[in-house]
Amino acid sequence: MFFQQYWSTGVDPTLSTSRLGLANGAAGLLVAVLAPVLGALADRLAGRKKLLMLWTLLGVLSTGALGFIGQGEWVWAAVCFALACIGFNASNIFYDALLLDVAADHELDQVSAFGYSAGYLGGGLLFAFNVVMTLKPQWFGLQNAAEAVQWSFLSVALWWLVFSLPLMRNVTERPAQGPPVGMIQAVKEGLVELRHTLRNLSAYRPIVLFLIAYWLYIDGVHTIYMMAVDYGVALGLPSSSLLAALLLTQFVAFPSALALGWLGNRIGAKQGILICISVYLAATLYAYVLDSVVEFFALAVVVGLVQGGVQSLSRSMFGRLVPAEKSGEFFGFYNMMGKFASFLGPLLVAAVALLTGDSRLSITSLVILFVLGGWVLWQVPETRRTETD
Image (cartoon, rainbow, N blue to C red):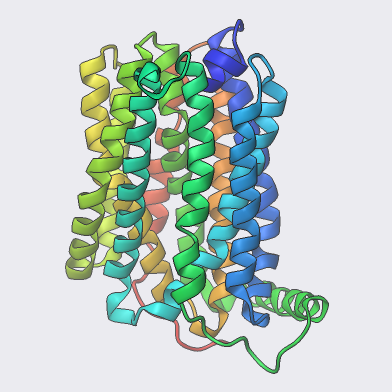
């Protein structure tokens, strides 16, 4: 929304949507290319937490830089936004791989859900503060909402950095495979192991099927999350209401992620994910006819009910499928597919918006991804792979 109204001001909303989609797509493509290499490196190098922090710092600095970009400077805004996305997504490769270091097999659903739930709660609290600051800038000695949003980017960067420190201090990671090696040697060994894995993908059929399914359905999830407010602006809905709806989604996702983690532990993660996909499918279809603030709020609640759950259950189901000793490498593939989804989804929305001039149709096109993703996931057995080839 801020991108369209401040950095990309004075242009057609459809063009602004396409610019934001292209920035998201470029960032997703770069991380997708890097992810398997970084994942393989994580398995070889004693220092996964340090690499996590390195990419976190890129995200923190890029997010903070957004607070200094002036009105109409959409190119610089797009660059910094893309770099922040790269830092966040690359750091998640190492963060996700640590799941198998801190949770036993029977704890994966609930530990993964707790992580997402805490993230939504923390992010929601900061977002609530930023919304108040944007709606009432005079309370904070600021001139207008635009200045408040710029300060919001700085607060997000600081929050991100501060809450990364407990992980660095308190989480114990699994030792790297083999004797300690330097960075260059670790990269070489990681690339060799990555090539070996790619040549023997047939031995990991459940993992490959899951990754294809994940690529498809998480594409729709990410795109809806990234483009929802921009879509609301294109429909002419008031900005303050869109911010409040997005905030509501954060707080709804907090308890629902925990509830779906519990449900996944009872009925199976795959069944839980399929339920979430079905809800997303229905919500996407309804978005085509949405035309009021009340309906946008209702849709925000529905999406919030499954947003954290589909992410946490996907991570825990994948954690059960992968060999523990190759967790970094396979979570690299996991994040690669997620980033290819981030690349495909926004570009799909941007392309349909440019070709048809219809923002409603551009969002509805995501239905295809949910249908195909659910169909492929249905064929994945819920078993844990414990041995390598």
